[in-house]
Image (cartoon, rainbow, N blue to C red; front, side, top):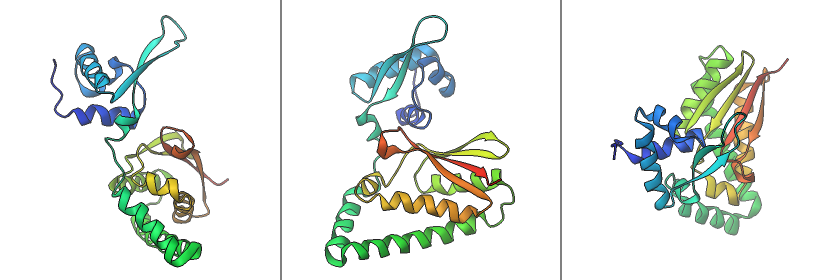
Length: 210
């Protein structure tokens, strides 16, 4: 079997790019299609990946490969159990208002950090790129897709706080508000995809406010 330096590299590619053919994956990993397919079949036996057929506009359907739920677990939440326990404790001891205050403190700390990171950025492209970089540092596997000169997509292929966000969706609303505040009134931030509603990732459309 053709070697892969780190099988997590293959899984990370499926995590960040979504479903793809073995040929596309092979090209991204600089290996042969047969080698990629062999690895995928081995990972499928371990229930880390699965495949499905996608109808093509011309010709036969394409065999697409994607991560399974178990595969997604290779990118676990950051201290998920402890975070959930702390959220429960805050709610029990200080009530709902205490939880609101906790999120507000977190939001302000993040906002300060993000504003500092974006302070020297002059263009929308540089601002979104800087935001993606700091989000990646925090574990979100963030990337940027240019739609047009005035529209960009901030893509987050992993959510390191997913377990906490599932229990307390105010965390997600808070992050959306942080993006909007650190970018300012010149821009509009809209959530395009949302992991907690069944999408495979979170993404945000960031546009110039005409």
